[in-house]
Every structure is written in C-alpha cells, then in structure tokens.
Length: 130
Image 1 (cartoon, helix red, strand yellow):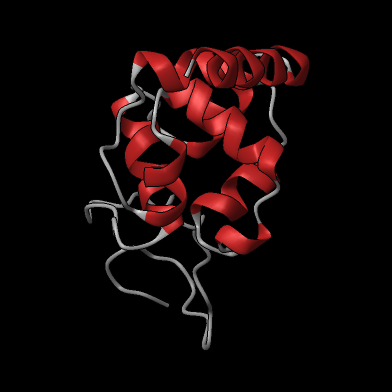
Image 2 (cartoon, rainbow, N blue to C red):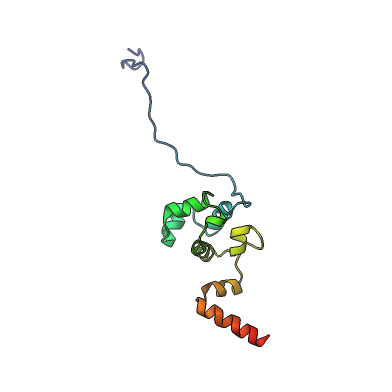
C-alpha cells in the first residue's frame, strides 16, 4: 500500500500514453524532391501534408509518401508533378531536380494549362513564325 495515496502498489505496472504527434521543426531539405515538395506546401500555407491532400482531392497516403521521400523523382508519375506544380505554384524543373527558380513563371503556367493539342498547335505556329 502506498502510504501517500492509500492505493495498492502493483509491481511491473506500465503506464500507457497516447503517442505524440510528429511535428517537424527542422527546415525542409531542399536537396531532395520530398523536401522541395514540403517547402512548396508550406509556402502555399498548408500546415500539414494531410491538409494539402484533402484540400486538393489527392490521395493522402500517396502525397505523404512523395513528401517523405519514399518515392524519388523517378517514381513520380507526370500527373503528380503537374498536380503539385499547379497547386503550389512551383516550377516543375525546380521541383524534380532543384534547378532553376522555385516559382513558376507565367509562360510555364500557361503551357501547363494547355491541352496536348493546344501545345502541338503552339509548337507548329512557333516553327512557322521563326
């Protein structure tokens, strides 16, 4: 019996507590695609991978695996790169390789919004003009 609390003393009793949530206070590693993706998400004012995925209608587990670096650039399908560059307004080259400026410019944004047919037409017109 514990003399202070008047409760029986139970040997080898384990106290269980809920796991603490993981919050990263470390800055993102901009040398990795996952780190650049996290940086872009934070700059777009999403506080978590979950909030970004939910707001954009993405599969949360897929997005988290991309951000955590479980899939490298070679493993990213083009559709994911396009989704992320649009949602976070970042340059696709920078996102995948770290080269160039992080932010998309107007020309890149317009190109990415075009359908494949519109892109082909733009290329033909450019070749004819030049």
